[in-house]
Length: 48
Image 1 (spheres, rainbow, N blue to C red):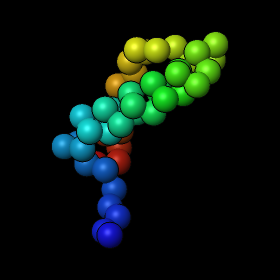
Image 2 (image 1 turned 60 degrees about the vertical axis):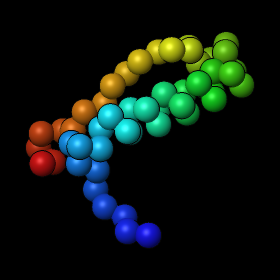
Image 3 (image 1 turned 90 degrees about the horizontal axis):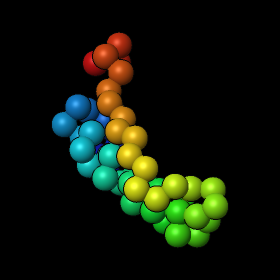
């Protein structure tokens, strides 16, 4: 397996993965995690 830094083209997939993880947490502990909360991450321009 090749491990590399995320690139701008990876951001949509990373955001989808984060939403999946959030929903797993929400189903397990809805008192702590809001469902359907969307926080998109983006690349830090200083890392490009």
